[in-house]
Length: 344
Image 1 (tube, helix red, strand yellow):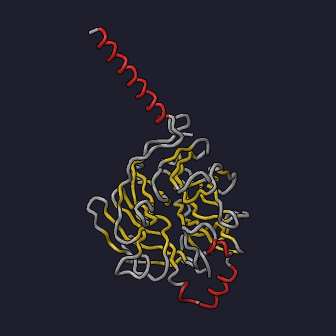
Image 2 (image 1 turned 180 degrees about the vertical axis):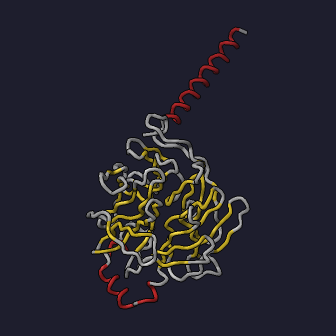
Image 3 (image 1 turned 90 degrees about the vertical axis):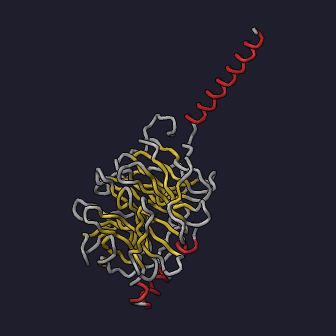
């Protein structure tokens, strides 16, 4: 009996040590092992989803039988019901949800494609070839205008009249302003204007790179955006205060980082990134001071265009893990704090 007791005691000790070792490996892993993601869309190809509410989303869908061009769709996450909200021609990209006004900011090439072919040719002739032929192929930089629409698409207002690319608009409630990227003088620059039809736009910051995808903090009115190199081969997430002063880099450890999105609490930014050691784009999170970050996904394929539900509990994103662009969702793992097991 004593031998049997010693034998089982040794087994118990070995198992305990194994569990402790395994637990330590998970807790202090350099990235957060993510649970299987829930696939939200299946019909056609779908990207760039935003939350209208905790239970309703808006996204771009293409390659559906009845649509020749990408369109905006609404989807109820509880019932699964989908409603088409635009019937436009050309490309389309979502910008922001104006929750207080129940409106959507988006950009589209619909009018640019029809207005002036000669002006369009001049624009394309001077546009950097790296945009079309470089390594960054996730965004359409064709000439577009910015529009404001009701949730159901019943009223659409064109806000910009620039001959060229105006895209990726963001909204700042304070001052009723929109911020967006405009191609001007051979560069993508950040501009701002009043949220009004035919309002005058002016640049907010001048850089040597291409600035794209600006986002406004829900708490402090500070900004984050992606700054690309001149050849679009590399990019970093930049942050600034509410007047675009005191800029800083939040992602110095990545070769390509883009599509940032603030968490609703304003304390962190979720983005897509990869470096030379990574085969795909994964999701990461960084505190607004840039002091620590963690990896949120490690799926097959690329993940980008992350956004967080208004209640802060879910992360929705575009992913190619199923073989085509689809919308997926995971649970947000809780606030990121420096010194926690999954932070870096």
